[in-house]
Length: 307
Figure 1 (cartoon, rainbow, N blue to C red):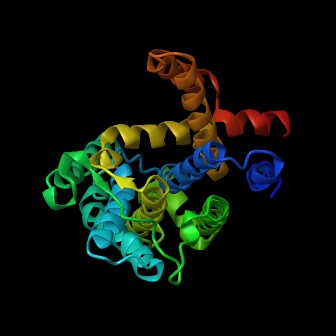
Figure 2 (tube, helix red, strand yellow):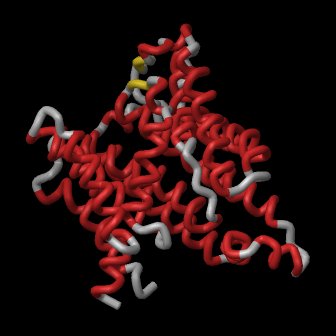
């Protein structure tokens, strides 16, 4: 709780931003994107920092959730009470099926297997000709909430993303602080010691992997509605790399660091894109330097200054 003031301050600032002159279409769209990516980054931080599982295919869960929205939209199913559970459930099932194999490995092998599964999902999405194939799929409209177009209201969607981001962070933090989370962290440090006290790390790790995937599906649901467009690029390994960068930039050891990392990543990316044409030539080295010289990430810098 000593460090909780910063993420709470960030969430409060995001809540007040539309009321402080940042309620325009461009600003709310940018903040919504940042918060959605923050949700996905928090779920990946739950895996990396909590279970020590560095996945390079986590964006696939976001893409599975997004494609669930697109496929249901194509068949006329647009009610959130039906679409959201399907998006989360599809991502969780994908994580269960792939995690059952991937979690049996560790280290570089785990990274490469998750990368392979992510690329399999990417190429599968590219082959879905009925849903746009390589060109992607444009939604007819955003998902309805109890028969209303609530998500089309910029402010309503902004506060929905904010509330779900806060809920994701709080729930993930509570899980890591629980007995379940303690076993995850212990298995990350020494799996053999956990086995010696009579606990099998595998089911705990697999459960954590599925939970992170379900949260990724939630982010995919929001992303599909934010952009009203879904494409295979959402599932690519580059997107997984960006999420991993956000986690490392924010600080691997702290869940709320993923929120900071996502916000800084999106703001910096957007600002550089406005300043120059070949902004990626500058953006990439800046991220690498931040990872190399910001020990403990942005969250670590804040913790040291206020520790």
